[in-house]
Image 1 (cartoon, rainbow over the protein chains, first blue to last red):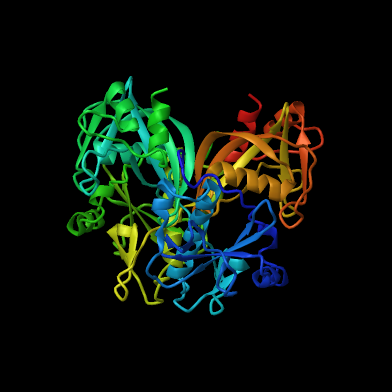
Image 2 (cartoon, one colour):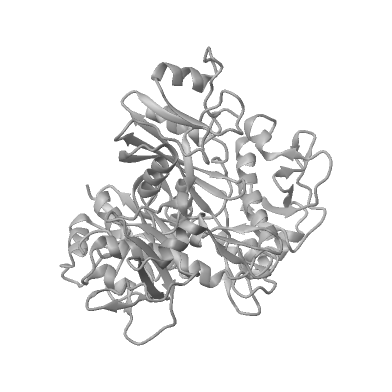
Length: 283
Length: 283
């Protein structure tokens, strides 16, 4: 896979039919239905393809939708076992077509939500899966809960021909990436960009523009890729967030994006939206 | 207020200090600290200003941050009472400066989350507020929970000089607005736009571009305003979502945005991002 991961799903989510129990039950029982099997952020493979046999129809399996061949897809949680394949590795290299890797983003995010939301956050009693996986209902207090999608801003901060990148201590040696952070309630995308850049690197920003977006299913983020023009240049890092942050010149960035930098520095892989925002900032 | 609501907060969220108990406790006890008092989507006012007296220091009050005069702001939940003011009405008209109305978006979203998330969704036991309101921790299973921000796409679908608007049966007579819907796990912003327009109106779309964003604290949405170019024109509405949808010509839209349409049709108010995306689509 050479481009942005998780953005190529061909699924029709068939949302208007999720709430129809007979319809969904018929799909669950259909032997041509595909059921992907996921444990955490790993998936079961078989001969370099997704294992999709519908051999254990399961009322807790989540309905993903229909692919263009009108095949129904579900996803179910399984216990961890030997031989599963990390979704992250399928994102970077491997035998699956991009649309199937993208389908795994949907599957993993929704299953993670069910696995961590078995109880009603309002009253503490057990909740039940509804709408083929897109709602949980509390029979005790009647509250409905919906899957989370957590927006994250990720931004290339630009000062003329230079771009600000940071690195966290835990990352592989030589790796730098765009700054990023979770959005908070009550702010705009643009305010979140300005806040995160100021918090993490002490830089003030001016005009902000949108580049692209990407679901990031670890566990359920929406990456919102932005460019921000710097209004100051002196870096003051927050050591709780970053090990370091630096302004990189165009010639360094071009080599870091390609992985050919003479000092072994590199930026995020093409599968990550960080790569897309830095590339866009150099245009 | 004449422009987009909730986007003008001047607060420094002071996020790096939220976790410092002594620091936050000192602010809670400071008599100059402002505490806004909220019940649901209503707020306590006093003489055409926010009631902000710090007369009941409360460990469950959420820290909002610092305003440019270095005053600390908190928000606390109160029981409903007579004489409170709807945040929606303050958004449209009223005595408060825009930055204070914007602050209420943050306050209302975070307080609503605490009010509906007193229990751990993973194990069902009571959770505790941490980090001055930006985290809840479960002492039983050690899970951390963070406030929700639910991304919503809202889009002007454009066919040359025409724009597609819809209306829900519950809306005031004559009102039309941009189509909108919650994003789902595992999709891009652009996929969500295409899905919602197809689901609600049967229209396929081509190129999609970003306009602007807005927090919408009823209870905790992030509105992502987009323009989508139509790739088909025949409308087939989903009657569960919409009462009707229509293509409007430029001269109608201009009058609907200004509220001067001869048939009494009108589009969303300037305070809503729907107004901004339709205006942008006419440029």
